[in-house]
Amino acid sequence: MASSAVESAAGSLSRLNIDDWVSAAPNLHKNISLLSPQQVELAKMLLGLNQSHLFEHWPEPGISDDEKLAFFDQIARLDASYPGGLPSYIKTARELLADSKAGKNPFDGFTPSVPSGEVLTFGNDSFIQYEDAGVHEARKTAFVLVAGGLGERLGYNGIKVALPLESTTGTCFLQHYIESILALQETSCRLSQGGGPTEIPLVIMTSDDTHMRTLKLLESNAYFGMNSSQIRLIKQEKVACLDDNDAKLAMDPQNKFRIQTKPHGHGDVHSLLYSSGILKEWLHVGRKWVVFFQDTNGLLFKGIAASLGVSATKGYQVNSLAVPRKAKEAIGGITKLTHQDGRTMVINVEYNQLDPLLRATGYPDGDVNSETGFSPFPGNINQLIIEIPPYLDELSKTGGAIKEFVNPKYKDATKTAFKSSTRLECMMQDYPKTLPPAARVGFTVMDTWLAYAPVKNNPEDAAKVPKGNPYHSATSGEMAIYKVNSLILRKAGVKVDDPVHRVFNGQEVEVWPRIVWQPKWGLTFSDIRSKVRGNCSITAKSTIVINGKSVYLEDLALDGALVINGTNDGAEVKVGGSVQNKGWIFEDVDYKDTSAPEEVRIRGFRIKKVEQLQKP
Ligand code: UTP
Image 1 (cartoon, rainbow, N blue to C red):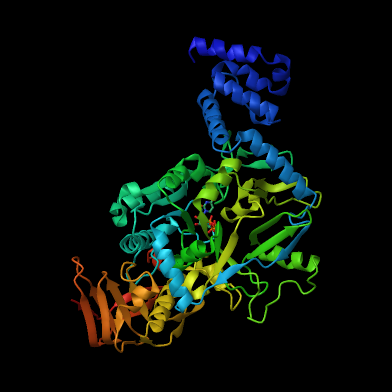
Image 2 (cartoon, helix red, strand yellow):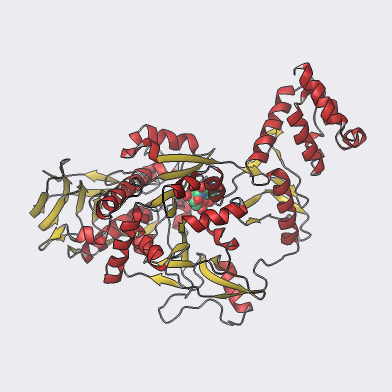
């Protein structure tokens, strides 16, 4: 360290009560000449926060000095990346840990009721009207993909957005999302008049676990056709782990000069959009909506236009996309909570909290199905559409901080020690918690087959899911794509055979005809309907892949595999008549067969292309 820096560090020190320093952290005190003035400030902050244990093992100056400086680099990062810095983190942690120890119920004083929202029926007149309205809004929209999660339940070695959404074409999630946004952009700009943005931006929130691989996936695929400037990556930082109820920072078990860190949760997306200035930029160019979505839901874009239309028509500041939910089903319910003191909020309440809350507030049967056969509290799928101007106003007040929670696993009933370190977490869907009662927060319910089929579970865990509950595996995620496309074509007038049942990786699934199209072929129901003419039929064993935009199916009778490639110049390609061949078939692949690629093993099959017709 330069001598002036040493003097200046010593200067900072001299303003402290040296006796306090020496008694609180003698080993730190011995090393003080190593530190810059900023690092001395950080050291003071840590001691003030009762974190002197972090220095107990520090050796004499001259030993592990680089590690000591790296320790302060990490402290500086942890401090800078949390709204209000480490003091605020530790203060909140102490409060939440005390509440947790006291067994405080976060919903004390609140009564649940059903909020207002819109229930959509795919393909009916109102759905089509909402889709039209949504397509007009789309150019004023931005998309935000939260993709910083570890994906521990899936256990895939790569990043989840690189997984194929289906293996008929092998298109990965990220490619599908980008192509869907581009298709929406093209249609929206064509249909809506007037000025305003002509590009729909995509922000991807990554973490240290996913950042480099996400960037590489984009770069090595030319951003899947999007302008590279249209996509921005924002990286969330992890937060410090805590060892006890006093929020003592936990040391990394592998490195005693590092604080152990863990992910803070997808709620970070709000503070990052705010602090990066991206939201302000969007507002400035007249953008109105942000759509938040998750890494592996291949059905998302089937209902996005209609849901945007609901937001615009109903003026929802926050629109939570939801699916019908059986009473007590293991998925959070969108709920309006009213407090005795008059506060209200519309938020996700976890299923294991909703039933007891209802029982405790005058509904002795708890969460029960209504005459529709479903719980009146719709199932949250964690996809949100938020209106930008009030969103930015709100974040300006909160700095983007989202209400956090802590979930320590205690060693015993005294609740004094943890089994392993814990940390604060926050969830994207908790944003409405701080909104004023007048805020318009609603929901849009769509059928599960249309809107929700995430890939979260590994095959072994998926096979253990109780019968009737969704697997949420790579197998079920792929089958959901074939099902939704089959049902959409049916609604558009095509005779599509019923599915057959098969078992892959211990999971019984419906296998519909493998119907796949590029988003630009049809993103809205009206668009798809206009591309199907006459009497078309598709048998259960069939596969159809539609590439390109101006492809029309006319009196097509398909019993086999058909790959249609549209032209680049937009000229119409009409495909019809009888197509019959041996088609593409499923070959079983065992999950434990390590000779197969991981993305194949986790779905339990590969597709063997026996015979097909290619057009033109
Ligand atoms: P998941 O609930 O699927 O969590 O996250 P996960 O961490 O990816 O997977 P598990 O729980 O370890 O199995 C829902 C969405 O939120 C993102 C994920 O990438 C996914 O899109 N996420 C999650 C973040 O962006 N950051 C986080 O800290 C956590």
